[in-house]
View 1 (cartoon, rainbow, N blue to C red):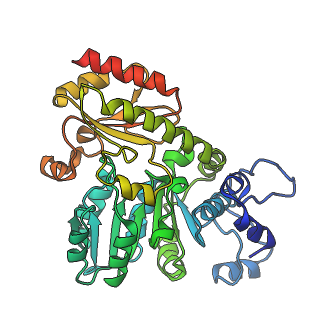
View 2: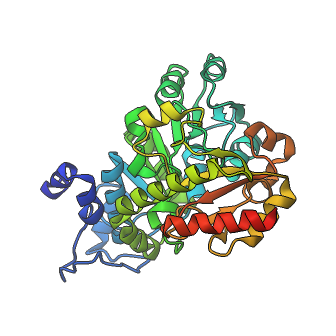
Length: 400
């Protein structure tokens, strides 16, 4: 480790987000360099041979590594507090690679039932096609975790907060059960972001992100990342898998996300302030039957969220009075807030999970997850919260 890397580990979060992982070229640019190259030249045939044998650490091909992507990976590692990071083309690429890199036929995965639709599909449909046994549990019920992990397992997977019902799972308790069963604990930390929650510190082995969300934060580019301190897993399982299957992040997207990281802490703080204001407003609204937000005392895991997260997050879920027709009328009446299935954006975005992100799961599975026909999920943006509340109010009134 270089002296610069040691110094960066001592920096506080805000400094790491602006300067962490920066490597300047001979031109001494102040902004991170954007290296739009697919390949790299070697000084000699012998150097190329050493590189391919793993005897010399140089950039070989941008599917394996790129200077701009490496800066993004190093900065994210500093923020998360991990030794290893690999940036992927999307969050789902990171999720799938996390499991496909080391699970084999006959292995077993236990996961929380409350998952993003695509994550649920990977666990419940894709992995079983390869002979991997999958069991889903109520993530907030430690008795179900204990029962499911009373026999050996190879992987445990959860989101906390979950998408879209914002369940908070006791990561430390599940980590102990997972490790006792011989499993690696994988956490999708996208809703919390690395600003609000550090799963590795709570006992997780692997953390995955959709960097498309808060890390970019302005709806521009796609990306994902996997982070871990498990050197054997990372070097022996994960890296050979991703190098040969190619879910790598483009240098341009990495450069955009480096810029996003510079303001991540500032943005997340304001997102949380705005989200709490919106949630508090909706909780008392006569046209809203239920408001779900970890920062509300009415949330069933309010106390756990206070101990596990630095703040309550950027997303609010709520049920409008009536069914799907009323929910659609409400969405269509919005003037400021955009209908979009993305989240973590500077702009407030709202979606109807039952017919978008979770529509493929079927009504019975959605019912188990609490994804009702009148549930909507709003990713609260950086607009003035009074304008967001005004828009929600007028749309609720117009849809009555």
